[in-house]
Image (cartoon, rainbow, N blue to C red; front, top):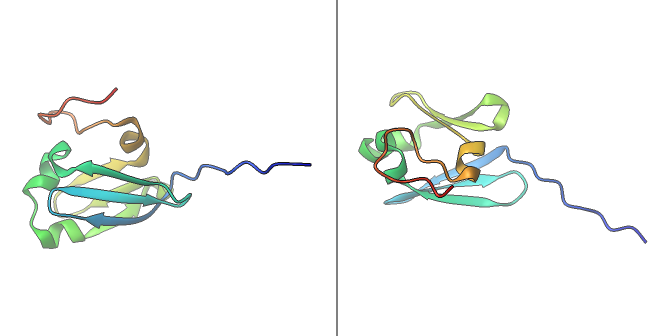
Length: 91
């Protein structure tokens, strides 16, 4: 009998912006939710700017052109806020 092991796929499938958080759905079914306060540029952006995201970096990143913000799934999984944010990392 063999047991198949699920494969992690950390590429971005979708991004959802809430009032004070944003969630990133990964291709493997996991969802990461973090506070907008971790990313000052996102926190200060307009709702329209927040919705103007695109997948970048071969699927492993999110880019907001107008506000010049890039976030990687690796950083999100590590619990790493943006450098210079007022929030301490979980790691």
